[in-house]
Length: 180
Image (cartoon, rainbow, N blue to C red; front, side, top):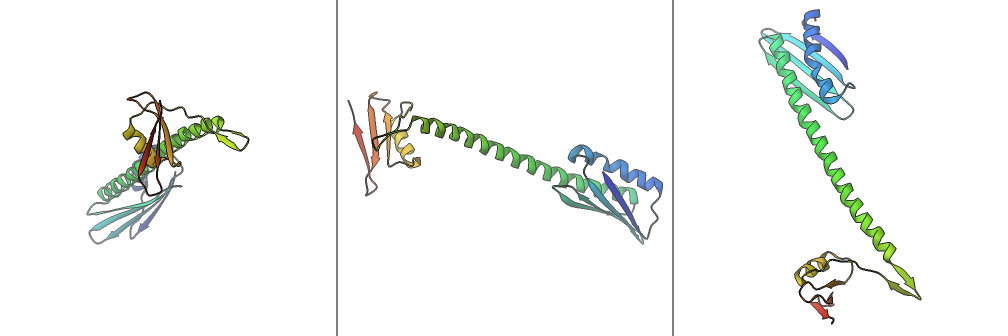
């Protein structure tokens, strides 16, 4: 953690420096030790303002506090900075969760692709593929056809137990072939 304190129209005392460092220590727990702070302390007449700029690898945020007392201005600026840091950190964590979820979904579909490609064989120019599907209703097969890359879906009908083929005509209507 690197802290630089600049005073405008005010002398930075050791008590003020110690107070600022003590208050900024909590950010190490939130964001790690690779943090850089630039604290600007300013006094104009009765207004005491503190601006804190925080830089990390992933965040650049600022917080400003202005009151009649220097120490309460520091607290106000740090509270604003902390709210922003926690909000940004939660966004980053949520983004990582979404990426992990997308990767797991892709991994599952990748495993299904691998099984499908293992099931594919080519013999004398005829492309064969094995399909291991659970029995489904015709309505489910219609939904699957809407999501499938193929113009047809082969499935075992849950009502009759027979293999059926649901396909799409060129005009967009659906056809169903029953087997016995």
